[in-house]
Length: 200
Image 1 (cartoon, rainbow, N blue to C red):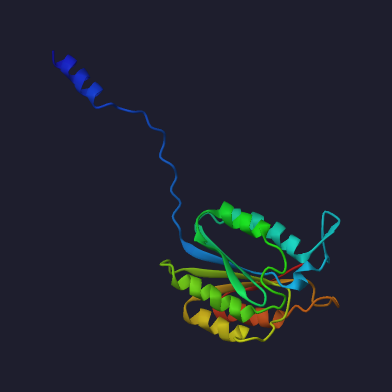
Image 2: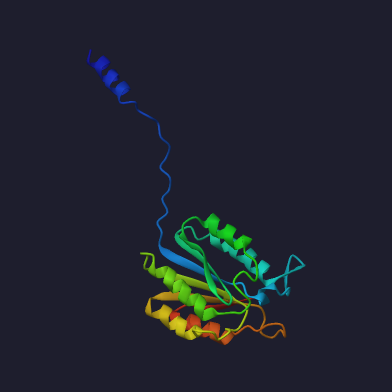
C-alpha cells in the first residue's frame, strides 16, 4: 500500500529529465576596441594569401579571430576618424561585435585620425558600466590630427581611471605611404601599463 502511494506522489510531482547545466562564463573585464576608419586605412599595401588588400581588410581579418577568443570578456566597439562613434556597447554577444566589425568600411567616421577623441569616448563608455577591469585595444595607421584633445592627455585620463591601453600600429613607418606615429602609440601604452605592437 505504501509503495502505491509513493508511486502516486512521484507521478503527481511530474519529474523531468534535464540535461547537464550549461557552463556559465564569468565576465572578468570590459574589453574595448578602438578601430581607426580614416581614409588612409583604404591604402592597399597589405597582402593576404598573395592578394593585395586594404589595411582595413587586413585588420578585420586579424580581429575576427581575436574577438571569438574573448569569451570571458564583455566587448565594446568604437570606430573613429575625425569623430568617434559607439558601434557596439559592452556585450557578451561576441558574434554581434564581429558582425559590426565586418560590416564597417573606411570613411564611416570621417577622414582624419583623432586618437585623443577616441580614447575619451571609450572612457565615457567605461563609466556607464560596473565592471572595474578596463582594457582598450587601439588600432590605427596614422598620426593624430591634433584636434581638440591630444592623445597623451586622453591617455592620462585613462590612467587616472585605471584603464590599460594596448596600441597596435598598422603599417611600416619606413614606407613612404605610411604616417604611422609609433612614438605616440608607444607612449600611450607605457603611460597606462599596456604595450605597443606593430602589425605588418
